[in-house]
Amino acid sequence: MTTELLLTELAHQVPGGFDVCIEAVGFRYDRSFFNNLERSLGLQTATSEILFECFSGARPFGKIAIVDDYVGVTNSFPIGLITKKHLQIASGPTPCQKYFKYIIEMIDAGVVDPTFMITHVITLEEVPTAYKMLFNQEDGIVKAFVRP
Image (cartoon, rainbow, N blue to C red; front, side):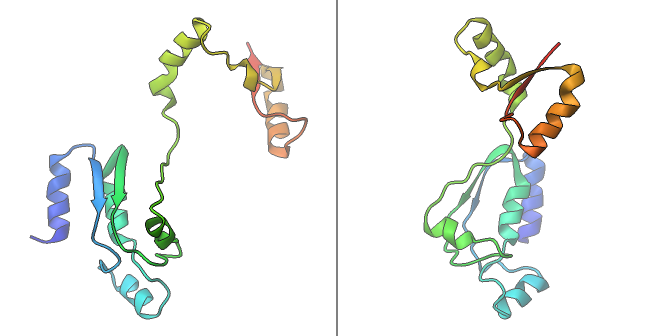
């Protein structure tokens, strides 16, 4: 069974993606002609192909573990620095909807006071002006509260 077939079979057994993907193959996992060519010309020291497979196969908010010996760059990305320093990377937007109800309850109960971050109170009509101010970093605007 080829690696691709195995990954495909596993993906069908895990709808939505994997909770955890462990990359332990390393920079010797060259599958494409272009990655082999880049390595042979010294343009990269590692390939990102298996990392791409892990990132593609992981579910949203899944975890990727890179357990390997990357030493340099892969497609100009400094993967060696990450693995040699044992850096942990977390990414993605905040899942706001997941916490929205909880935060509103905390605000209503007086446990959390979000007003410390509001720099400007505006009306709906002032929103276009506020966007321009944010874009141009004018008047110290950081967070604007739109008064209904």
